[in-house]
Length: 507
Image 1 (cartoon, rainbow, N blue to C red):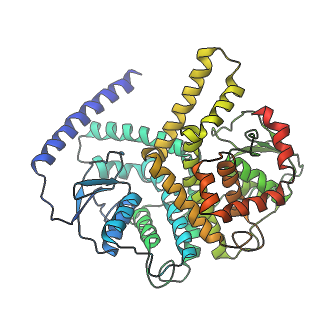
Image 2: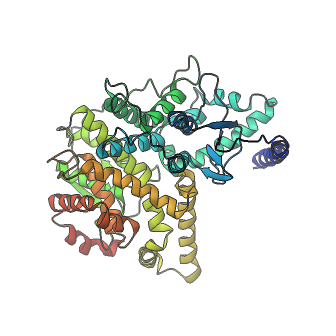
Image 3: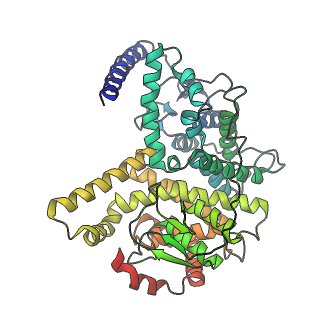
């Protein structure tokens, strides 16, 4: 305890002096900028790449693709949202690479996608971009892997004295560890994290195929994102054994001789949906699609990773819905994506990952922190904690809300305004709507895992939160998502109403 306190005080004192000095120098040495020139604030280049940060390199690549005049300012001057990169233009400050790009498109009337992409291709490009930005494991690899963390420390703080660089990096690692835990990827083992990254990159590889760029002979914004990620993951250090580009999938486990009934641990149904949790409903839908026998356990018993849902089977515990599905595919020799070709599988993976790693967090905000989820929260807290004495039930509710705010901030979604956050979710869902089009399911007449993920999200958001932005969207701009969800419900949940009426008392 004393050691941590000393480390904290020393580091805090250093940062106070360091940033005050930098602020004074910055004020004294602020260079004039030509009118109409964008000032791009980003991290310093790495020895082998223009940037070690994919968002920074993506934004700079967009500026070059759009031929927008800009000037780079390198350093650790963060935006008001606590993020890098960000831009200054005509005395306006815009943070987050995607919001910067939207601003620049409107300001300079440029769009690197419009001229050659169809609406369906734009939807796919958006899902690929979101998958790479929200789910890949580069952040973990850079700060926590034995192979690269030491290099990161020396690259960022090698010019400081011996004890100071270790102290600073220790504090940063501690903060980063909290953020990746909140985001979710930090709850997995290193091997599991690299497996997630492998599936993401193989999906992008399958979409690219032998083409020059993702959608033909002209690059788009998704190409800039892919380029930025590969440059930062593979070109940042010579002779590094980069697990992000040399990955191995788990060895297949032998199927146990004795089969037991699978137990699915998940949240109880709400008053309007079989589940208010997209991961839980997706996993249960997968079990129904594959006709795997299972039994629900609705108690609030979390996995060792602190997550729901999770399963028990033959004395094995598997956490996280996607790892559960991988396990069940191997164990029961089932595959609901068998009818998809390699490109379609890649598109399906991108759509599912975007919904689960990006759009999902807008739902978390809507349910737990916005006015739209107020009635849901009131009913939940009354049923779960209404029997407790006055101060205790309010204290528990406060702690839950505080934890969710921390998780949202750690992921990044919590740094945006409510309007910005719903805008992100709307663009995600409209992208999926374009991919779905007028088809019965995402890829024709047969549903796949991505259909289960889409159905689970719509049921848990639009159906479970009436009059919310999600409900409004599927009623006005994306009616095909509502029709798709109804079709999935009729196909796999003929007992939908019965489940809700039988189990809502368990919430």
